[in-house]
Image 1 (cartoon, rainbow, N blue to C red):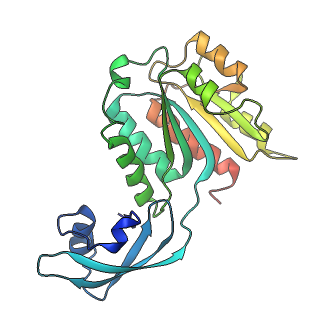
Image 2: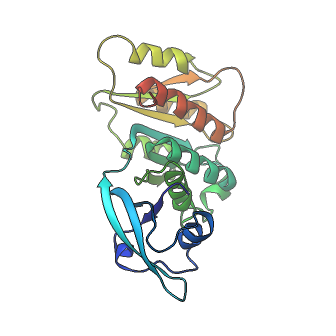
Image 3: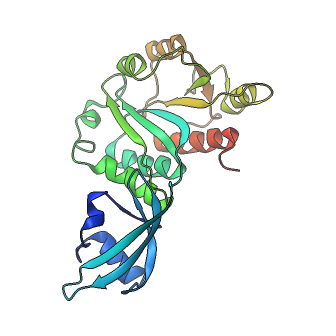
Length: 251
C-alpha cells in the first residue's frame, strides 16, 4: 500500500481500527499521533495526512493536506475479451498500476458464458482490483470500468470510429498484418503522432473471423505480439507496457 486512499466523505470521519488502511498505518508503517503518511482522495487530490489522535479504541483521527492533483491516467483504452474471473482480477490490478485510463470488458463469441455471469463486477471485486493497482502505483485516479455483452455492442457504443487522432489496434495471432512493434513505429514515428490508443485483446480463445472483420471495419489493425500464444492477462500487460513506452509516458 504505497498510498492510503479515501473517499471525500471519509476525510471527515476517524478511520476505524479494523479498517485495512488503519491496520497498515499502525502495523506496517508504525505511525503514531503526530506522524504523517501519503494519502489521497479517490479520483482527486494527493497529499499528506497527519494523525492527530489515536483513541483508546484504536480509531485514527487525521487531517488531510492536499498537495497535488495525483498522477494522471494515460490515454490508453483497453478492450478486453472477458477472461476467467481469477485472471481478470490480476489483469485489472496490473493495468490500473500501469495507468490505463479505461478498461472495457466485453463478451466475445468464444467467451465462456459463465465468466460473463460471474459476480466479479457486480460484487465490487473488479473495482477493488482497480483500486489495488491504483494504490500500488501511489496514484489517486482509478481507471474507468465498462462492461458490454458483445464486441459489436462495444464497437457501437463506446467510441466513434472517426474520432480524430486516435489509433486502434487489436492483438491477433492468426490474421495479423504486422507486429505490434511495427505498427507502433508506423504510427508514432515522424510527423503528427496520435493522442490516444485503443487496444483490443481477445478472450482466452481469441477472436472469431466475424469479430476480426468487425474490428477491421471499425478501424482496428490486427497485430501480433510474436509467435507465442499468451494468456489474456499477459497479453494485456505486455501490450500496455509496449504502447505506453511508445507514447512516451514511461520516460
